[in-house]
Length: 264
Image 1 (spheres, helix red, strand yellow):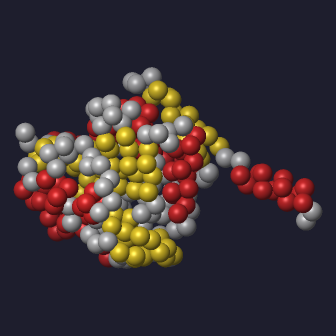
Image 2 (image 1 turned 180 degrees about the vertical axis):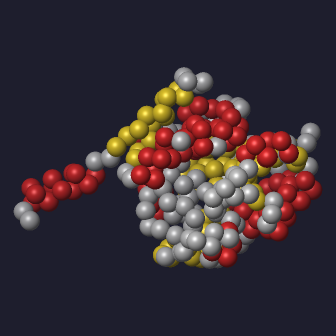
Image 3 (image 1 turned 60 degrees about the horizontal axis):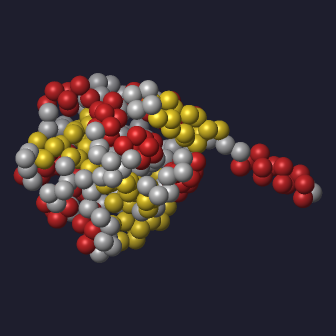
């Protein structure tokens, strides 16, 4: 292969498809980098897959602070920065997803609003292992420190690859590294949500934290611990909202977005 042929092949590989989502409610256009069927699906279903999440993000005040824990390729981080003009801190340890997250930030000129971190969030600060179900952009069903099979009860999904990562707690993020405390927090991390909440006491005491969105299955003991702790810290949730968001079939049966509000 000569140099010119090599350059052409590299150019072909570097070319990416951009999908523009027209949000008619905000009159904003959001552009996403698409490189396979999964990332295309994530872009095409943005406004309808999790309406609770989308409507919640729309309510954010301008210049508020939003933590997106388990940001994946940044679908909600990008949406929040463009539609709500808030300051976003995105946490995504998986290397393929973080690459697309960065592409989405740069494509939308959001480097001034989104702060991306390629780290995991869990219940301990350490070097650990991210177990991957697949090695592809937009993939999910990965988990930090423990095997996804036993932790999320997704028995049909095998973890195939391992990636070394740095992981920390929400409390350490703010205490050790002085990242500003958020007004809004989303946690969607394929089964270790309870571990994250376990080491977030100082975080949850923060009166600036107005609401928290967590994917929960109330049929799991670990997830019921989340609900109990959130209630202990003065948060409430709407049972009707949870019932409407609950998955009725598939591998995620029983899971729903729980939107916790601080009971003022």
